[in-house]
Picture (tube, rainbow, N blue to C red):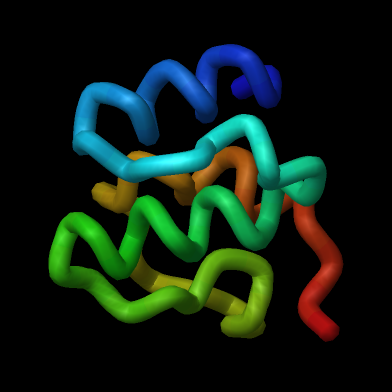
Amino acid sequence: MTMDEIREFARALDIQSVSVFDNKEDLIRTIQLAEGSSDCFGRVRDCAETNCAWYEDCSETKVA
């Protein structure tokens, strides 16, 4: 997903100030929290949550 698409997704959840996010990971983690999930994007190795909306993008992100 592009940053513009992620920002639009965040706006649909009424997340304020989406334009201040220039980091994809931070914005997705904010979205995860707003949805009531853990903010795990890019933080879990070998994630088994294949039904997660962010799974594809996350699997391409290196775990810190």
